[in-house]
Amino acid sequence: QVQLVESGGGLVQAGGSLRLSCAASGSIFRINAMGWYRQAPGNQRELVATITSGGTTTYADSVKGRFTISRDNAKSTVYLEMNSLKPEDTAVYYCLCKADLSILITRRDYWGQGTQVTVSS
Image (cartoon, rainbow, N blue to C red):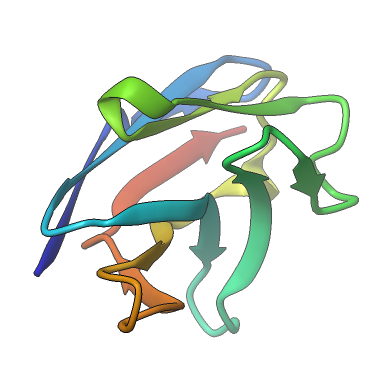
């Protein structure tokens, strides 16, 4: 129904930058919000940042001032610009899309396959 394709992960030294992208496609009536979560080994998946269709953003305290989330509504794509990366940012980053598939099928959550971000010290 909905496919999410993530890109942009990789290996970077501490203090470096990466940009993640996530493009949504499929039978989508309306995207309400998109965001990024991450999961490090042995940890639970946690919120990184979200952005609504109106542009309202939310960030985890640990990334405020370093990460910026943005979206291109025309391309159904969300971006995560990550600066001043730290070793503790190392995790698999997952894209989340909150969408309505129709006026009757609403509030569905879809996850990307995940992209690895590794920050070396």
